[in-house]
Image 1: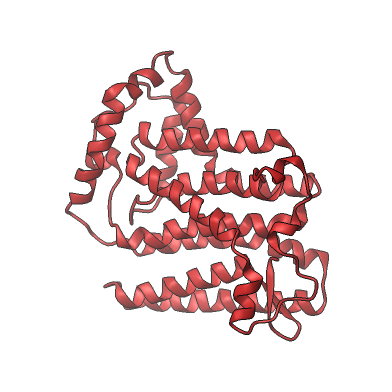
Image 2 (image 1 turned 60 degrees about the vertical axis):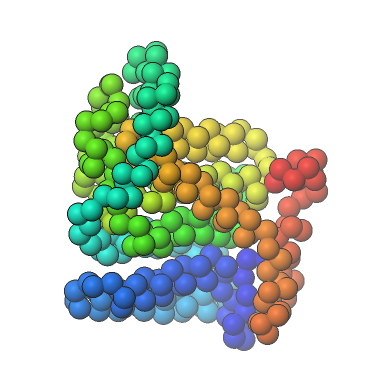
Length: 320
């Protein structure tokens, strides 16, 4: 069950509820933080416009279902997650103190100087390059995963996948204003840096320098996004197995890359992983009971999330 009727003829998908909640949260944060009035007005007007347009699309798609509108609703969440990222960047405030970073880096030093860095660099630039490539590809994991659902005839599960992905990533973004911090490559410049300055690392540094935000590094949205994509796909479709294995491998490489490349602290990576775990756990909630408990009506024929999967040996063992 991926949608709920809020009025006759209007069904809103769960991921759309999540996005609406985040956009509303962003407006509320601007009212609390000491940001410029112009920024406060910009976020308010922009997010209100997005919510209204989103509502109009949902209503139109419910009243006169069209494949084109339905596909647009599949892909719009990814664009709005990017908007959410930029908005959290607008909320960056000066934070000259680095007390949080000083606590977090202790764990990194124990890990990297305890043998992890030596192990990664034992075979020259091969593994460091692979880690940097994986780190760069995090931006493509969600659209790739969604496209694979189309390719393998599982588009009906797009809503469930997007719900897990959006919750994991947006929970990370939502915390950025709460934990103002800078990455270890900035606060502890030159300390425990990778031995090999590969072209892939230079690309990642260029991307972060030109398109990154400077609000916070905790939790790691890279790790949250990678594991949310992996958890989402494994949750909604146990086949093909190569896809799930690929996404889990990428998520593991990205988690290591964030710490090894000094993009994040190990505490960030751990917190990002927990956001993804929470997201997939939240998707397991029997939503129809919650909706009925607050008097909201389900669309006719809406399935329970657990019943949406085919009965296979994989999901009977709890792997789906």
